[in-house]
Length: 267
Image (tube, rainbow, N blue to C red; front, side, top):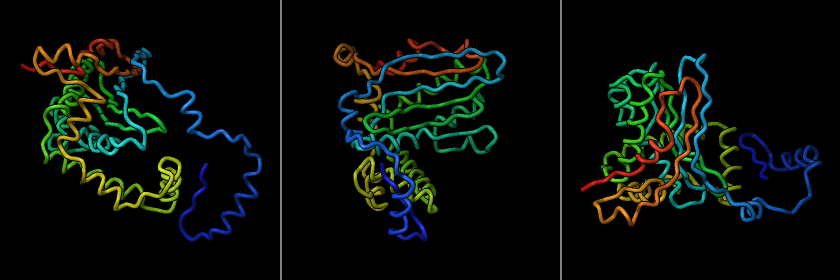
């Protein structure tokens, strides 16, 4: 547990307040690392649907096993998240966004909103896309999402990566603007890295990600791309995918459909 503060505060005053207010915490010496080592998180492919026809719009998320905060590929996944981007029907310019997924969705008008996400935890993570759409658009929307995600494993340009890097750095700067976000960022970094990570170091890690890094991360840990018939047997062990859906989702493809689209056969 980390208590952090930012702004016009004195260290001694914060220490005294913590001593007064946090008097009933457990004395159990077990650490988070010990709990993780005892029961490590295991990503399990699954599908959960809550069918409710009274809801006008369907909501669903497609997730892959991501990375922990300390995983070397955590930064690459952040860049991949920026490449997939986010979009809302109420915001203009969708057809001209840098994200090809947002362009495809906006041009074909197959969703109300979509958002790529990358959630990091102590020893694992979740990477995927969340979307809201009308019931008759779910099939086309699911295809667009899986196509653009799988494309990250074989067709990524340096221009796409540079755009995503700039967007990521800009959003990080906005996130840590203010005393409360700074204090939250300090606490998270102390718990995950054991030290404060300077902004310059974080930006340097982002700049180190290139197109080949994105392709490798997508191939080895998130997806598999099968190149030719010979490679088919060698790389058939695909990553599982988890799907959660709610609303009128009868026309949303099933788990097997999503998993079959985590790879491409190329000859």
